[in-house]
Amino acid sequence: AALGEPSVTVDVQAPAFGGARRVVERGDGDRTDVLIELGQGGTIEGVVTDWRGDPVAGATVVVRVGDEALEELHTSARGRFTVHGIPEGDVVLEALPPGDREHDLAAVSQRTDVLRGRTTRDIDLRFERR
Image (cartoon, rainbow, N blue to C red; front, top):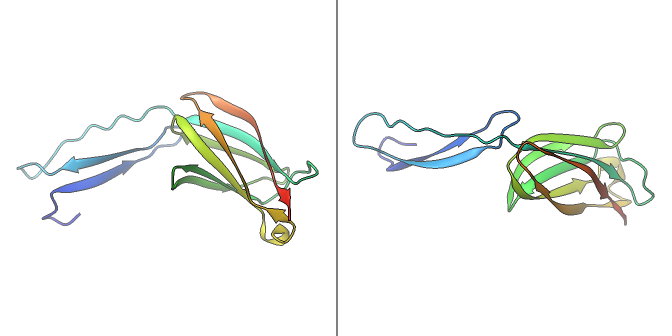
């Protein structure tokens, strides 16, 4: 932030922990101490499949809270994905087909909840046929 700004937004993230965002008001002095505590995040494990139930390698999985994309990753050769450090609460998982499958697979999304320190397992994001 510019020196004249009355506040600054601080984003903090660490592996296996949920992130945090704080708006810090500028104090009268040269320095303002800020304590930001990160809560342990949750983990999501799942698979991306096509309409027949076959795994889809290289699909993009996006984890969203509201309009914000928290994570973006690609599925393994077996269509599996694991994402760590997701803040506790409701999230939307969105799966996008790999480039070579965009003609026959339609994007799909699914809501799930994440609990601090727990793993949400067996998510099956199943593409619909175009």
